[in-house]
Image 1 (cartoon, one colour):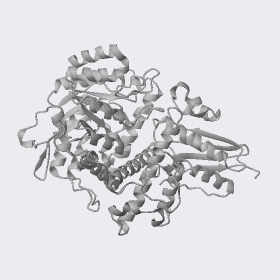
Image 2 (cartoon, rainbow over the protein chains, first blue to last red):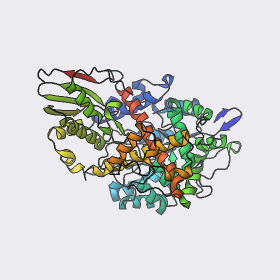
Image 3 (cartoon, rainbow over the protein chains, first blue to last red):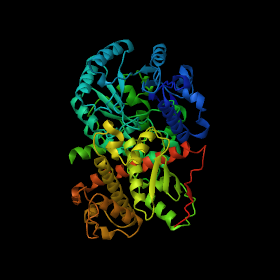
Length: 347
Length: 247
């Protein structure tokens, strides 16, 4: 919980990871390139005093995570969203067993989401069933641009992907987080293209689709489809740190999101350990749309409460203390529609 | 913007830089020379060698290839340039792209079975986005600085925009997607040049604005990451050398 100016905020960090990119775990040069790229993001967009040294950044472990998120970082609950990248790392980038064990030790504070690849077809489907049971999955993280043998990525509406989504409904996995953003190796397939989300969101209303990185760098395409669908959400991972380096640009992103998809559909995340939550939360609570940006309404305390935690809490049925609740229509499609959504549907 | 600290002494050097300045990052809609993507230019008796660099190892290989091959084409149009070599540094697909460029293999020839189709459709998608953002910039300026009302936008003609950079930019982007550049043409149009009907103007303008914000934001990311990536080991300036003895 974070408190400021007499207001208390329940905080859910909806995108965190434990990774291992130490030298011993690198399978090839791409593993090194990948963590270097992450480190550049971290260094470039963090306040100077929040920058880690490189060695710590390659591996920090569970104890450090608990401290950064819950002791120092005001977070009430965090959700693991792993990227395995087994082509680059011997034991994978995201450390499944370590994260799962940590979530097992701290079930009140951590939720573990796993991932699957529908191109594993029947065998992968059976694995998903076993994983769902062993891990108690409520959500999955999908990476549609990941390479797999000769395949250059897949679409959510591909035949096998649909079978997996249908299986998710059966298994009670309701939150489908989709990475649409900075990516590994898309070629002609445009890895940022969100059109496939549009199709499956229409067909599977029992599922919630969370588009990570709010579709950046294609914010407009994301906003456009999100206005058409009641079960599409935007995760703020990677967009958040602009609040420090480019606050006016952050104001535009959040202003556009509030206009197009509305306050009930936006989820805070630090993308830990790309960034640490403490400073992001402090800055977000202090944040206001600059006065000269008259095209956007000021952002309210209630909107901040929803974005920082209450929306994600609704998607994951988290037990929010009574005193921190306010009504949110997240996970309750079609109650309140954003201004942009109303106009699009009307036109 | 990355400063280009070079003294342009010869016409050949300036012609090379001008040629590279016509190459645009399709996602950012800015010249690669302004973005700091040109690392070095070396002119000698045999020709010119240009090294390019990008903000991350994982920048999309399709866009990386597009910029590198556009650079080759632009340089070949320079008078007396002789052999043109363009190399992409520090990218996960550097070897493949550099070999493809050296062999003039084209996109499909470069990536083989990994490439499904040509890149022209992808290029067009981004040229259309760039056009939308350019329209929005011009219209927003008019709304802010003149008495133009949103309800009158449908009547706005290109000649009503003040001559200058913003209008030039809009005209270039119209030309890129095959639209006319006559000054009597309407400003706010769809991708085929058809004027947006008055009742659709507010929503379409709102959408164009989010396109523009997206493009601007990508520029922030890419500039920041490039600066961080190369801050330790070298200057961010473009290095240019010219050892050519004969004109």
